[in-house]
Length: 289
Ligand SMILES: Nc1ncnc2c1ncn2[C@@H]1O[C@H](COP(=O)(O)OP(=O)(O)OP(=O)(O)O)[C@@H](O)[C@H]1O
Image (cartoon, helix red, strand yellow):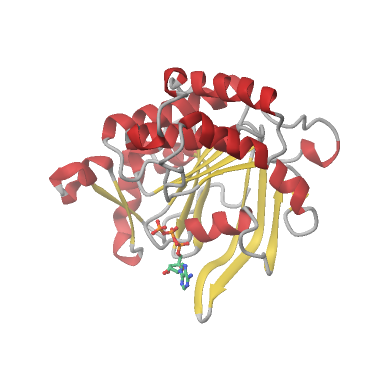
């Protein structure tokens, strides 16, 4: 099991429970009565277009914003009542790049470990171990500015895991990367989930980052359209695969406004056929389980 020992008590609970969470920026409602939960040890994709509310949701889960409406629990720990306990269990990779380019990979990571109160020797063991897990063992002494975008992302993932969280949030972690780097990072995270029991919440607007074995939460204009196992969603849609399921949900797509873009469309062709649209009027699948 990755992270804090979670046996007993409230820690036996779901990795993340979001209940009736709403958030507004002035008059603008960014999240509207959002409810869902993530099972421990699962890889769950948070799928939604730009502006759907993904970053707002992550900002609330990570306690950057106060949760005024609804409740959020990380492994049973309420983010408002027990923020320290909840945040100890949480690692976050933000959308924006956050490494200090003038420091080496090791220095970036050691600095972060020190902020978490991890002793130098222990920190170096963890750093080397985690760098090896993301295939970056030989880059410890390299300056961050000499890394590719994908390699920087890997270092940021290592940094988010240094304090051994049980739940890792990644906000559009593959934005700006080429297809190869994107799939490599996604694969590395999936391996971590399988090998360590880490729970992952992966925000994206790219439908091809969703796998049949994943769970998914689809957010559209601040509301949850679908929350549950991708396999259930595909089965209930009657489609052969995920793309088909999403496409199959497009019958009333004009009502929706949610269109989920594939990497192929992003990578260059601009092929509109590569866009899948999800129908907000279609039956919800396993919502807010
Ligand atoms: N600081 C802010 N002030 C006002 N409105 C905001 C602010 N931050 C976000 N919003 C609005 O809230 C809604 C949700 O935004 P949010 O950034 O959470 O979505 P997102 O799904 O993360 O999008 P992206 O993928 O572009 O980051 C959008 O309509 C956005 O314009």
